[in-house]
Length: 85
Image 1: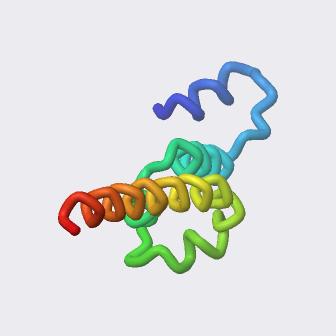
Image 2 (image 1 turned 45 degrees about the vertical axis):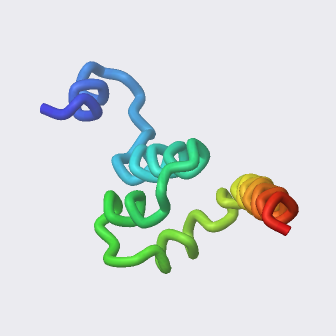
Image 3 (image 1 turned 30 degrees about the vertical axis):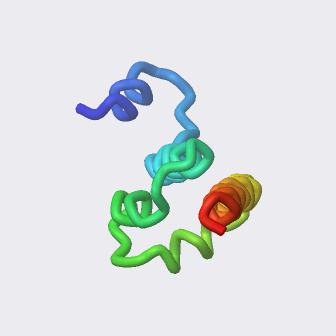
């Protein structure tokens, strides 16, 4: 018996579906910064298209992280260029 089935069979009001648990788990993985392709695979999708359609709004926080990473890379490249010129 699954944990959810056990919880619901004990006379508790069970309005949580397996779908909502799956959605929550994957939303938390996105928020934690896990790899989108790996998350899509855990959902059973061959690519990330459907995942981005459903969960795309959760990736807003990653835009800042990507920009910060790009800035660090460009700063390092610029510093290396100054030392070789």
